[in-house]
Amino acid sequence: MTRRRWIILLVLGLAAAAWFGWKATHRPDPAAAYTTQPIAKGDLSEAITANGVINPVRVVSVGTQVSGTVAKLLVDYNSRVTAGELLLELDPSVYAARLAASEANLANIRSSLALQTANARRSAELFKQNYISRQDYETAQQVEASAAAQVAAAEAQIKQDRTNLGYTIIRSPVSGVVISRQVDLGQTVAASFSTPTLFTIARDLTQMQIEAAVAEADVAKVRIGQPVSFTVDAYGNRNFTGSVRQIRLNPTTQQNVVTYTVIVGVANPDGALLPGMTANASFLVSDHKDTLLIPNAALSYKPADYKPAKRKPGEPLSDGLTVFVLKGSTPEPVRIKIGASDADNSIVTAGPLAVGDKIIIADTLKDKPKGSVLGPPSSAKKK
Image (cartoon, rainbow, N blue to C red; front, side):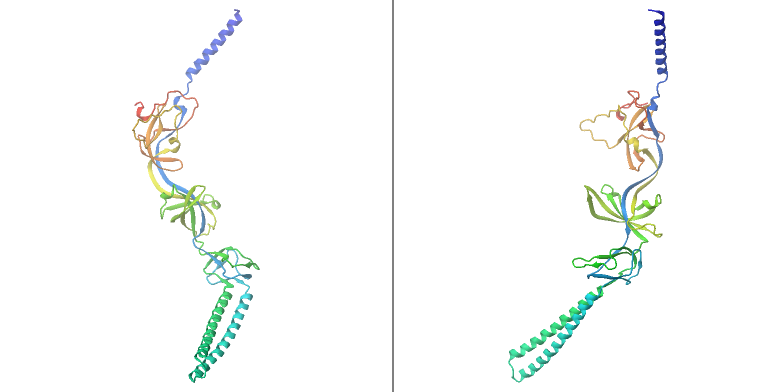
């Protein structure tokens, strides 16, 4: 072997020794393999969320009982109206003609009744003198009664025709604001089989309500008078408030998802909330002050090499959760119970956790020292 080869081997050996030496003195801290968060006390508000549509509390649909062509249209969208105010007129010519014909028919029938009444009176006098038979007398009486009935029917027809003529004038039944108009000038309205809606009037836009769809898993937490906060997309982060007014018992099922409609009363003094807006509502279930909180991320964390203890035959199921606390450089499993939760934290109701304990929420390093987990809480080493 030449001198040059010896020098190359010596250099390689020194490099390998230096690398192993650096590796031995720069081992990563086992504690750095985990992302932790200290246990602390704080406030927590438990709430459930739901979406719903904002509508006026009382909405009145104005329709028509007769058909016709719109001859006069006196209101439009957003018009403020009072009870009894004229909204629309249909062309009355057809109904006026029917009323005139009925009145003429009544005059004709009344003249016939006058003749039959006179004939019945004469028949009665002749019958007393035995100049006519009883059958002729009774026939005259029947003809008079029939004429009287025809007069009554004609009078009823006139009353009906006069009422229909009055229906061509549409007036507002309540005071409020017109939020919808379904007809226009010159349009023909057909009311043959159903009553068409002409206008929709909101009685009071300062009082609104949210028709929120609450999932069946959350509806048991909703109660009458419960405070509700909500936002609408039109006003960004502005918070509005209301309270639960009604929980409707009629469920709605869409794609196997069952929801219940919850009515939330909302004050709208400045008119900011408009009908049809979508509300993102939050129902306050409970409010907790100065409680021991654990991050929700810790509830789902499990080390890769953790093996829970097998349940023995006949042993009851545990109702707690296992979380991991970093003791020195080693994660130690701890059994706890939790209560109310929000989006970030949960309340610890039972378990050996204390303020300041470092709870593990995630892994930091992919390659962690093996054998770092002490095992299930029942077999963990005591330090």
